[in-house]
Image (cartoon, rainbow, N blue to C red):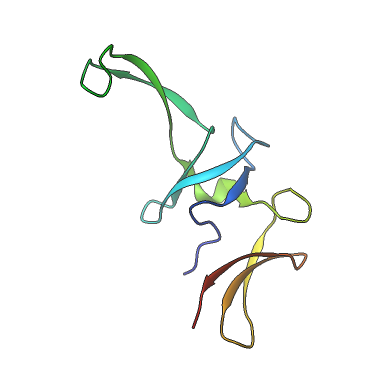
Length: 109
């Protein structure tokens, strides 16, 4: 089944503590139905000193959010929108917002 979110999309969070915030999708984990959104659901991680973090300490990282709690942004309205999938005459599958605005091309046939 095609997912309504892919890496690089701008999305809006529709549920949880970060409701209403927007961000860019950094990673999609299809097996777990979760995504990581830039600047959303940040948590502290305590790290030991290493080559990457010579001082150690606390760093902030983004944790995953369930894919049902985000919507892609509509390019016309700059708000979250539901998505449906259509195929044009050339056989190109596209994601289309409910109001008809094209969100992106998924694949070419």
